[in-house]
Length: 464
Image 1 (cartoon, helix red, strand yellow):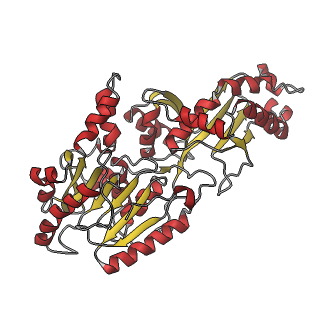
Image 2: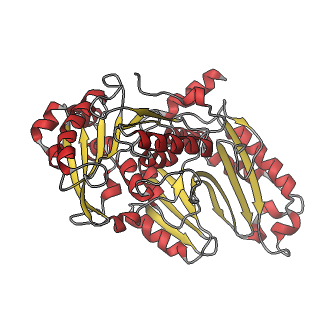
Image 3: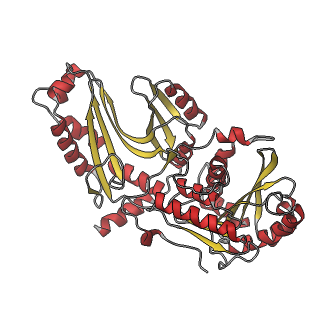
């Protein structure tokens, strides 16, 4: 089994820069189908097919753009489409009195389940271990589908077909609609008088309940998501907030990117207490993801080794609530230098939200050079009534290294940029853009942590 899993891991790590996948988004409201289709078109999806009667929108997209689909609004779940077949009920042998399941075998063989498992592995950073299947039949009671097709027989036949096509090392397990028992690859098969559809969910709607995973308020969840998604957080990376406050930014980032490792520091004792409480509530809400490490420390003297962090996210003090503008102006150059020390020399990058009035020290060329960083972009935003900027910094060689890696790719320039930062998240944040328009881009879809992932398997904090 280990050899098979290693084979799938190798297949999952192959470059998927231009692999096109077929997906579909489902919604509970028929009136949202058109809006979802319009959003998909704006996000660059192709072959968008809105099916109002099914409350689904089918589309094709490049695999590396799948994380951008988190920005879709009004979607219940987003599936990788495995089977999409239309037919006439009268001509389909699946609905004969003596049911012929050979068609089901043919459709499953054409679904290319190994490729689907590899797509899931690339999205989650590790190969899947379990699969499950749920089959539903629809249609009027008088239809041949309902009269002749037995659900138990359909479920058994479908499971046998999947077991023949699923790559070795991915074992079958009991399917559950929700909860921790849900397999890594839950397949949903729907049979109706007009066609058969089978999909594998990649993202599911997040239901935000007040106090569900955060005890003390902090930065707005849509702004926190915007900072995190712009940083293009990857599985296994270490994310640091040197001025974490209540750690709301880290908690929100962990909700959407649960396979990274998060650490926060703050010099204020009361803020550290709130951050520790928020971290504990977040772990209780999603125990499968690594815990958040909270440390009482000065941002200008971080207790981490050189190059031990990959990403820095920070909503630096604005100089009103916590300190004066003069104090912030003295803090930021030292903070920038310290980030330059702890960030990885290869993939190190920082996404910082700062007020325009106090952001100048972060944009000084000499300070950036001293930190061995490069100013990648500076985006103007408006947070409440405060004019802000989002500053993107990265290592000088980070972009050039990615460009060299993709030198033979016709889309080298695009790949080089998106490899470091996720710029499409800011495509609507132009000059004078307000955070209100940014909130329209907040996600309602999140990835589910793999089944059985334990703290011991995932934990990796910055080395002290």
